[in-house]
Length: 164
Length: 287
Ligand SMILES: Cc1cc2nc3c(=O)[nH]c(=O)nc-3n(C[C@H](O)[C@H](O)[C@H](O)COP(=O)(O)OP(=O)(O)OC[C@H]3O[C@@H](n4cnc5c(N)ncnc54)[C@H](O)[C@@H]3O)c2cc1C
Ligand code: FES
Ligand code: FES
Image 1 (cartoon, rainbow over the protein chains, first blue to last red):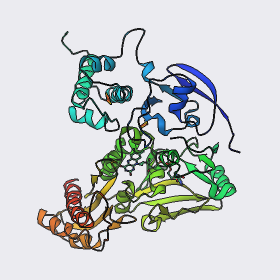
Image 2 (image 1 turned 180 degrees about the horizontal axis):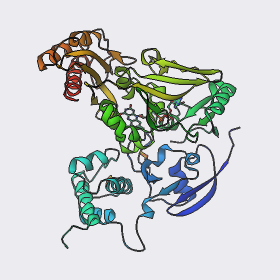
Image 3 (image 1 turned 60 degrees about the vertical axis):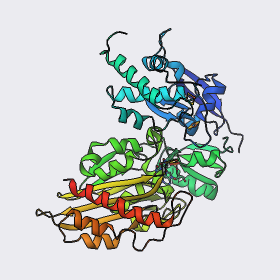
Image 4 (image 1 turned 45 degrees about the vertical axis):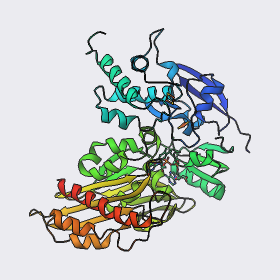
């Protein structure tokens, strides 16, 4: 029984992939190992760190806590899917501008959670940003600059910033 | 980090899920949001040989009013309970409890049915649903039954669900006008789960007197407990801060919590009174 394989069709960053997976394949390993999209990280084995955050049908989720078979038919966006041509997403730019990262390990997940927040709430308060990032742990930058980065991006995305 | 392999079936209906449960017996588990089961499987604390996914069964999620009851589909994710206008207006304590579970990503996947079926003594929904007198609709191969909260939560991780039953719906009586609900939680600083929490429902008459109160406390034992002495002290009284404080001071009567690395039993008994007061005060301030 336990050598079962299942064919799934999962759309990642706009491209539909048909692939064969073991039922136990976690979405994060499908993305990293089968599709080679290594921007999505694995930072823990307890579903707590958020380094693996991607969007599944528009919602931020932990791809280490979803089986690839559960995502059959779904649309996934990973960190690799945010930039347009060579232009970074404003949240990516914000992390660069405001020093929202040091080692960068947590950054893809932080950015995916922040993008999810700003889609629903273009004008978040500091408290709302912190609440939205509760599922993302950073072990080296500290959260001050991460919150600044999200605020910077929110301003850009609303278009009410004064130019630098 | 790598679960043991298993056979996977995406059930197409509740009937099919119950048939598969009966067929595979102990070797099978239902999969809803996966946010309790998959972490346990990754650590190989659980290694079911078959997973029956409820995620594709139509009609199991959503929130609607059904007469005097709020009907919540078992597959409704925490985020949708937290943001539901119906829940926020009619049962703010329920939306509040949903909004403090885990984190955004957990709330985007975890389901209310999975949470109550899992019956973790440190979970949030069982506590508020106990205060709100919720009942649970269980569908088995040979029929369906509805079980009230005190008969549903039996022990640590143990509910009234029979091996072939699927929880399909959570039914919460809509409180009459003049009532308020609230939920207050001391989260564990690392895991975010409940250390101690309190849920309150108060019903007032037009003069502001309390005509009935339900207070449930979580984190004090194997399942949520009703604070009977607190409820009795509120009954018939005006909900002044003094009355609430005196009633809340009895919130840990009859409980016997265990000390753990984070909180001693004495601390838990004390903090239960603090959170009970907070929940009752907030509930009393709501129209
Ligand atoms: C990082 C993290 C933090 C968390 N923090 C909290 C917290 O603060 N508070 C809290 O309350 N919870 C917390 N949780 C748990 C979370 O709320 C889970 O979503 C919930 O406990 C289980 O719901 P699920 O849909 O994910 O169920 P699953 O994991 O899919 O299933 C859990 C169990 O219930 C059974 N089951 C599921 N659905 C049904 C059904 N319809 N009928 C019968 N049986 C069923 C399954 O077979 C399994 O045994 C956290 C989880 C994580 C990963
Ligand atoms: S890898 Fe840590 S939450 Fe997914
Ligand atoms: S930048 Fe290093 S963990 Fe966050």
